[in-house]
View 1: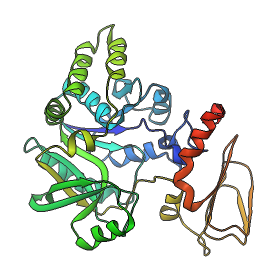
View 2 (view 1 turned 135 degrees about the vertical axis):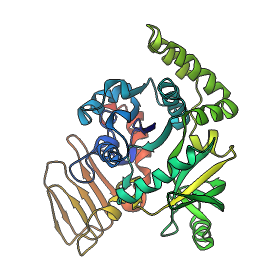
View 3 (view 1 turned 30 degrees about the vertical axis):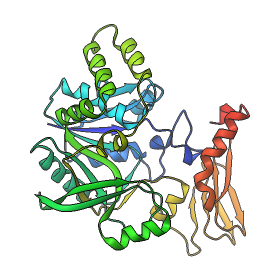
Length: 357
């Protein structure tokens, strides 16, 4: 039994002002007519029945998930009482799925990534599932780097372990953090590093064993939660146990510590769409390097990203700017400072302008 588990609780702050606390990035139609969440679920439709897909999200987003995925059973929405990073939400999903099939395979995916070649993506997923079914293995998908990227973590891989569904699996030597430019160039030249996609495959029983070994506090919490499922105390227990948890990623909490970790290299047009500058890679540009969305007119603009939700935006003689309009806010930002939007949001909090968050 295969269980796609889509992690849809993030805030997507770097896509402010269109991404907001009430409607974050994964629910936006940044690419085409469907949201990133809808596209993620859609690309898995040829792999498993829709009823096997589970969404992990926050309480505030349950309505958005139901609105965008009306065919999804309500029981397939796993609700976090608060965000505690990917280790906690994956452990929570695992104990819900354990009740259905402890030997089922989880395919854990972010809800806000882009995949250009869905067919190739599914072939790599099937290869990962085949390996996961063989034993207590942790499997991730790495992306063959096309340039020295400083915005992604990397996976250093070693010897080939075997061929699955015509795709090679490699042992993972180590996970490394986002490098500086020179280090990224060295990684690219070595041919021994992949971009870390944050996509994982394993059996339900396997990840619970790893959590028990490396994150015993999380294991105890999710076991307590599991024992409350279906009782009148379920929400109370979930909230109490979740409050106590450390906020830590799967990479730090499990992957970097474990043995029997393998990676499948992938070439399926992946992009994590991490900030507004991502649109220059994934949307059509004009002959002056501009990317325009919505109601935009330019006169002498170069290398700009301009997104209008409704109002007309006129852009004259601007270069290397990001300009984004929403119902109640505008963003004007140089491309080189696109990663600093979180700093702006902190300032909005300090100035008590929380209605704009």
